[in-house]
Image (cartoon, rainbow, N blue to C red; front, side):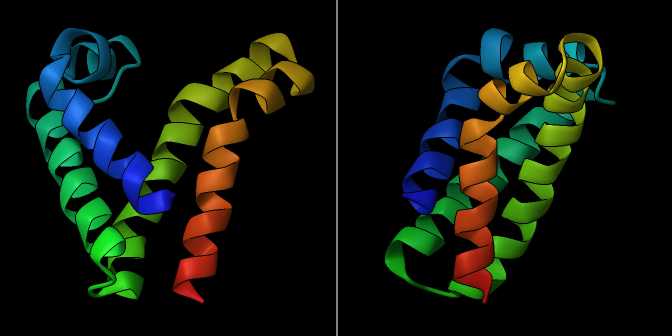
Length: 107
């Protein structure tokens, strides 16, 4: 599950750059989105594949943990601050599941 979701999300950053790649990174205020989005997409594709194949699984979880934690801070914390805990919990359900899945694979 974890590998497949990151693989899919990484590929989508390349297929839909305006919506999910550099355009989205620019909208949420990340620096140098035209470089950062393809880098993050590449990390998600490579590490997602490693997890799916069972190769260097623990090592592959580390960049993905950083990835998902940055995603939570940049996209879910603003929801928490503006719309409250229940709205943030609803929006963060996949992110929360991914963090728990990554922690499971790491340990």
